[in-house]
Every structure is written in structure tokens, then in C-alpha cells.
Image (cartoon, rainbow, N blue to C red; front, side):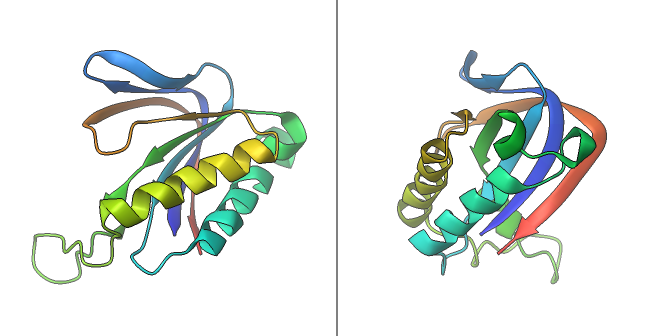
Length: 141
């Protein structure tokens, strides 16, 4: 499992002209990719890492501040561009494997008390964000 995590002042996801998920205060935008070998344990560990990641102001986390997260599935994080000019998607999980694991990350975050908004799986999404810093990290399990 892999995530690109950006500290943002606001972020939103639009599907077919409607906002389906948004945060309008400082928090984290999480672009989340699932590898074909990932398991429920990876989802649990990713949620724990995201919740406790100390990249907000004054080295705080969503756990310590109550800051929101916007989680958006992003299979393209596993695009392999080492050969040629066209990415290979063989490492990315198939949708029927990835969707339950993305949902598991979101559920685990919510069980920890996090405020979580999401995109919509298997749709064409427009993601907007105002990066803070900018401050962006890659979390790779």
C-alpha cells in the first residue's frame, strides 16, 4: 500500500459536477494506492500511520489535533514507468481487491476517531487542493 500525503488548507473531490468529499480546514489529502499483494493488515497499518503522521503545523498529527483527512483512491500510484513511455499497471490491485482495502483504511481511521471524507471509487474524479507549504510525503508500506 502506498500513499501520497499532502498537508492542505482545503481539498475537495468532484464527480459529475457534484462535490462528493471535501475538507475546508487544514488537514491531509491522501491519494491512496493498493498493491495486488496488500491485505487487511496493510490497511490497518496504513490507517495507523496516516492518523499519527506528524506533518501538520508544529509537528502535530490528525490524531493529536483532530484535523480531517480526505482519502482518494489512486491506482496510478503503482504505475511502473521504468521501461518505455507507457506505464505498466501490473502491480496495482484490481478494483475488486482494492476497493475493500481502501474502505478498510477509511473505516479504521473513523474507528480511531478521525474525521474522514472520501472520493468515489471507480469514477472520474476531479481533485482540488490548496497545499500548505507545500508539504507532501510518500508513505509506503
